[in-house]
Length: 215
Image (cartoon, rainbow, N blue to C red; front, side):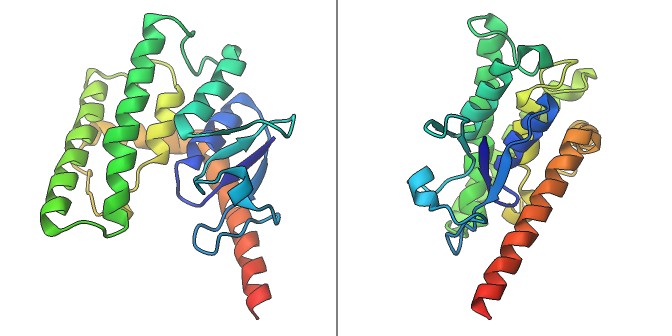
């Protein structure tokens, strides 16, 4: 498998889940500004929308995109890892609901803030939406559960962890203590440590290549 990623994006969720399962996809970095990839692939042919993550399966024909689709697919293929409820169950519907909530109310709300696309009124409105959404997650953790869906780490935790972009969007959630403690737990997982390390290595390699070509 090939996994196309970009630094500090939701592709980290796929890395994290792959690491939890024990998969080792080839990581390919996509430079979102220069549009090049670390292995020379034309990313526009992989995903015409130029979004990461994109997962090229072992048959080299099928490509999956959209974070919640990719992480759910990988978790479904490895049920023994316990990363997602069984399809068709109420628990699965509830987890899917949580994933969609995070996609629409967190991931998509950060983007216009990070790209400086909003008026002052828009910034205030969107920031409030994000704070409300993160409070929902903080409240889920208020009963002492270690993870967003209960006692077990799931794809929901991976997705929330990979979309914590407050340092770039300007949204401060330090006051949400339950969520801060949850983040510390995720950060400490070997799968998360490996995801960040592997990302840093491929990004550094690609940027060195770009610099060498420009010299």
